[in-house]
Length: 403
Image (cartoon, rainbow, N blue to C red; front, side):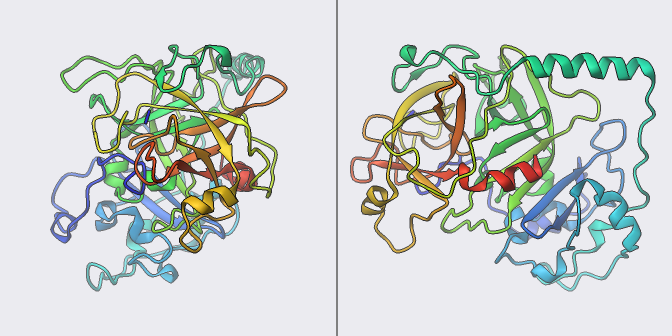
């Protein structure tokens, strides 16, 4: 492990207007976009059988627009993104109740985006039987027997070296199936949700998002020549929820919760797959200063390599105070109270590691996630010897709301 400014891979393509208007090209999945009081939600629409055939929406230009267009300060006016009041779990019936109807698009960047949000009907709840209920109870019992925050013995960790396979069971990778390259990292925080960075998705459209998968229990990424990865589970993405205050220019509030498609097969915890622990809520950004933290990912081993690594790597990085970090990144408001920094003098995260976890081993022996890989200047850059992470303890309530 070793930031260009952000640590996300170069897989995200910059959209051009011509690509957006090619609505005749078959679209593998459509979606909906809406906002809540503190988040933007980008949801992929799939048919009841799990295929990419849209269940609710006709094909729309919004499926080809970058997600960043809909974020705060983007090209789509906030007033024209539907506001959901109440639980996001009721979004289907909410839109049906509104009876929203198509309206004519004015032009590419100034349009009323209600058209892709129309629902033809509310989703019907699947029927259950006693056999399914018993299977659910058995599965829940197994889930509860596996604790959060499982990780390796810290004495075995060597900075910037390959990790023991499946020793960090909460680490996940976002990939295009068969590419052999991890675009971004993340951490499993429940049977259905992954905690990651908002920057990982802002350049993508819903169309691109529908083609990404979540790899769980993976050590080896495989390669584009046809050698498969060794992931224990591969899950599709159902939705991405990005913090309402996320600023792609400053990477403030760089946090997202990804919900995996679990209508047919949910994640079952095992020795290779289990969640990270979320830390106690805290506004004190220096609470963990001076402690050793642990990072892991499949990103570049040096700045600008743009190749990633095929096997999971790990490193120890000491947390520093925000005042120390502000001396390194000295521009006004560059380091905020929603960021935490770790020294990168010996090891660092790098491009492709964005979204991955920074964890600390608590006294109970479990690993708690206190940071999300976000940004920095280069990788292990002597001139800027600190990596910057989203400070999770300050955002725990928001994360739990959407997990």
